[in-house]
Length: 473
Image 1: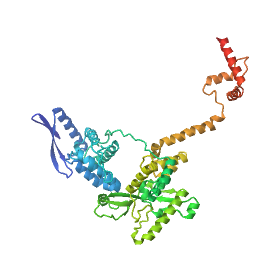
Image 2: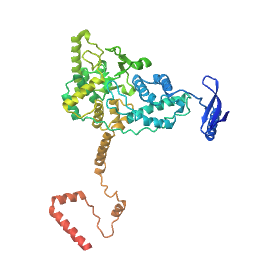
Image 3: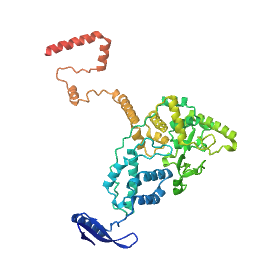
Image 4: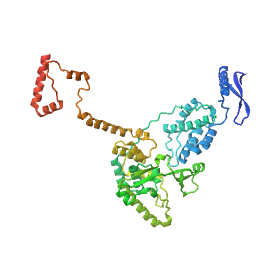
């Protein structure tokens, strides 16, 4: 089925195979020595006999990743994931290994790729350019490897390669540092110092309702329930089922309007991106969140002011029913909130955190209020898995576990005399005192109390102990 032919100083393994079009072709594979040729011959014949032979393929990684995006990504991804994945392919994968043949990628190649990736300058965005020339971080490298692992897993499924070389790639160790957050007092100070109305509303929604910034900016008035009756009955609530985001026109074109609720008409039609309202990425993110009364009244006043502005501007106001909108009614983007947040921090001399930290502050605060009730907190935050809360906020849960130990001490041990449990032998001897001795129960707490109240008793005891030590010595 396969033969070895010597060619000058090298050896070639020659065999026939049937390609994907059903045509029989001959393949010559050159090996360094006769031993390698024998090994390859055995592998080819074994695979041909088992029907697991993978026909030779000259497809490059660049060509394959295009097929992967077209055949897999466009079916599985949302617009945000599409933009992130295609960006990683264009910026980090194709420049480093795009010209290599897919069948030439080995685990050794993948380890070299990771090393090269960490020495590659990070690619910024139009709003966050990489001015300092920072290199790709371990976290970004981990995301790139995760994407390649998925892609090459499909290559195995499509019979392009026999095994996934990225399956066991050694990713760089990522050190996750705990995000700095504001405590409740700092957030109250920030709210008191805040002069931008939209930022004020956004901060309240982020902290009180644990909302992501995209959820805040995508909130519409039809999902806000703040009637006087609702507020009086402590039943004011909002329903989170949309996110505001800016994505590329290319992703919209490739995926259609899947999961997209609305595409906003741009002010400048030649831009390559669009602002959209879309459904959340996970079902758990669609949720009902109850409002504290104060926030319900704040939203009621905000709605009243917004309605007055609509009346004043008339047709000039572009009404999209957004809770947070620009003065002309158009959507307010994340970068606008972030810019005002930076101004507030500098003006009020507040600790340097990002806006998203308010959501972390919210989760921390609620875990403390409800004594670590994970399900209640998860309902507000919209985390897909409860493990995400236990992993990120373990320090809060540890504090509650400490309180649990204190409560256990009071409720269980505090009502029982278990002094001899630590030494069972001593307890046994106490139950069977020597003949002629008198068994007495010593109340240590009472004795200490008497000594504290009667200094003379303490002096007497000290003298007795001293005399006793002289006698024994």
